[in-house]
Length: 280
Image (cartoon, rainbow, N blue to C red; front, side, top):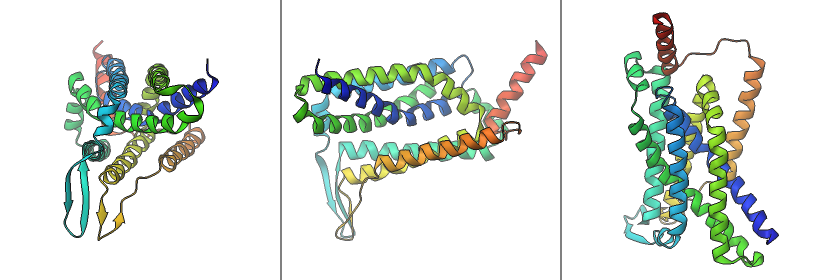
């Protein structure tokens, strides 16, 4: 019944939805290469995995915080730092996201048609494995942000650690339900507009760079005796994303009657649908 608790719940739910945008973009790109009947299943499983990982990490928050401790310190003169479990997971996730995003952009713009046809029939299990791996990284980032927000708000609110945990679990469940409702339309919109696909992959590159910086910051990396690597504020990143989307929506509205560019993956899928229609 504490009004501060409701404010915290709404704030955290909004935060989880914002932090989940990168998850939905990645889901849209990966599931868009599956057969049409498998795409909703991949999105549902991906978001449910995201919810499960976040809740499990919340209940194991003591273990998560213990991963901050360095297990390997080094000093090579020009670079020094201490590798921890958190920094390793976040840094590896950033590398994976960069690799995946650049590979997808190359495939969509310059990939051969044979490989596009092969990738269009990717297995559901392969897509889920990719989604699960990245969800672990996104979950770490989301939980650490949520815990920091609630911890800073806890002293004046008075709902205590147990109440804070309930609020965070509630926010995660509500945000995932909202994302489940909108994941289908968002994925359809992304996959129908090539420029949105490329923008989405560019956003994932930005998020990958942010994760690399954050992983380096968690490892307390210092170059040439004292130049420390700082994390990139998420506000700058999400402002750039929303501003870019706003500009692209204006472009789409102004050029509504134009013929969109066909990316390789979309071209192959369209040809398959046309062949099926002719056969029927």
